[in-house]
Amino acid sequence: ETGVTQSPTHLIKTRGQQVTLRCSSQSGHNTVSWYQQALGQGPQFIFQYYREEENGRGNFPPRFSGLQFPNYSSELNVNALELDDSALYLCASSLGGANTGELFFGEGSRLTVL
Amino acid sequence: GEDVEQSLFLSVREGDSSVINCTYTDSSSTYLYWYKQEPGAGLQLLTYIFSNMDMKQDQRLTVLLNKKDKHLSLRIADTQTGDSAIYFCAEGGSQGNLIFGKGTKLSVKP
Image (tube, rainbow over all chains, first blue to last red; front, side):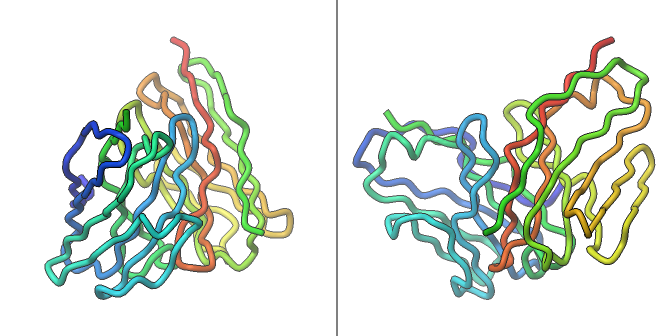
């Protein structure tokens, strides 16, 4: 039990639609990051938030956006969905990112785009 | 650039030791990580090692780090069928993110 919960667990959207995925971080963890895991691949870094500000971003277009709230919850929003956005989206919670030694993931939200 | 390489498959017999290897490129990573992913599930943090250590042991798990060769390994002693999963090696990136390999699928035969 990591204390990181994500919702929804599964969802299906069609091309061009928009989606919001949610994450509740472990209490006290001020850093949340989001990853995209395509089938058969390792997770790819989307972005990271620290104290409600984005402080790192991977190679993803601006239609991927996020928010972090003071209550340790966060959102990943994806606009204008494409077929290639079909993936498992993972949220990770930590005290300060990958340089802190403990970075815990939720179970993920599996998005299918038709 | 930042990159992590792992072999894709490993098959062992129950009771044997498993050794999963990984190479990475960023020597400035503070920590290196091993995660386990079972089918349809998220990532479970198995263990991590601080970059100035060369070994860490945690019950059946032993992590070896060769910083000179940028080589990380995970040894699982007395491998059980419940250890069958995909194992990911990860290094810390320049933005505080994790950079993952493609994962090693471990199959444990009874």
